Amino acid sequence: MPMEPRKSLAKFKNAAIPKESAIRILSLATLINTFGNGLFMTVEVIYFTFYVGLSAAQVGLGLSLGGAVSLLFNIPAGHLADRLGPRDITAIAYAGEGVALASFVFIHSFIPFLFLSLALGAVGATGQTLRMATIAKFGVGEDRVRIRAYTRAVTNLGIGLGAIFAGVALAINTRGAYVSMLLLDAATFFIAALVWRRLPYVAPTVSKGEPFSFVALKDKKYVAATLLNGVMTLHFVIQNVAIPLWVVHETKAPRWWVAVLMLVNTISVVLFQVRASKGSGDVRAGARMYARAGYLVAAACLLYALAAGASKIVACVILVVAALVHVAGELIGSAGSWSIGFGLANQNHQGQYQGVYSMGFGLGGAVGPTVVTALAIGMGKVGWVILAAIFVTTGVLMRRLVTGSWMAMSSKSI
Image (cartoon, rainbow, N blue to C red; front, side, top):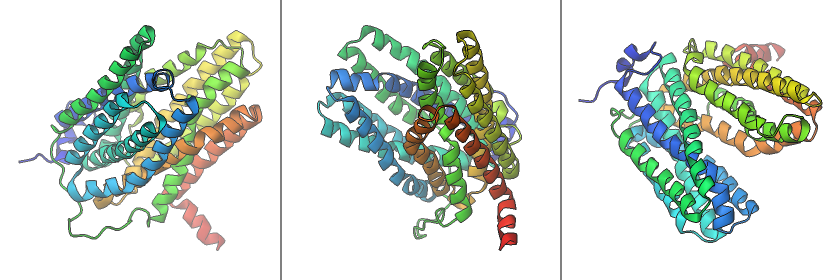
């Protein structure tokens, strides 16, 4: 008889390391999968450009279109999770990603690469939505936020370890070395699928006879929260796109200082993400955390701007302080975001709601590089100030939306 996930999480609630078997299984599957992701992310551009013969523009186009197409699959995947239960479908999605990745070693031109990128985007989005739906159905309140915090900490650890391991392929620098990384990444998806199948069964929350309805998209408050969260996710793009460009072109800090800043972020997330989720169970508390995160990320933007024109040592110090403030906002904001995404959702349609919520992150990732680069790099310090204002405003609006003060103010004005 399958165990009841929500009841089984009671003893795990205050643990620093997950003791409950289901959470250990979920974390292990995530670690295996993200280790493979770290391998792929580190070598993909080099392999496709130097050994497949694609141009950097073709690689970028294929990956971008794959990300865009993925947005179409979030809601249907969530609906499947609600109607059939997320565990087994997630395992199938894992295996599908493994097949897609392994197929990349057989391509030699752009069109097959494009189709495989589209397929990987579709099945990848399906898998991610189903994984979030699984977490949503495994607990309530702070339990599921803490589960998500565990998986995020494990994700950063796995990607970091994978990137380090991929350094072997970079050092060898042969086609065989890169192919081995791709195949190893594919293998991690199949192994993760087998591990995931060991999770307890989670029953569907929607009857098979119930007609499909875009219930999550009809929830205006939830859609508004999704859009606001998409804006806030620009700070991840700042970290991955703007900071490297800013350090190299606008400050006197050495190029390798970018790696130091990335290391500060990765280690902080691994060590403190679970702790940062404490107290986020109530959706109103999550909204307050989200607003605080907006102020912290805004402060980090202003600090990043101050690094320009400073001496080498001063610039390095300012950038590290900025990175610490930034990751503090990231930790608190992530916990607040999960609290809002889980807490505002209809409990019987958590899968579909998580599919909608993940679209905000996808949209932020799609338009973020252009927006962030235009502001931070194109406009310099003024652009950083604008970004700071955007994050403060987004955090405040999210808090008012969730607590109802925004709607109260609107009704009074009418």
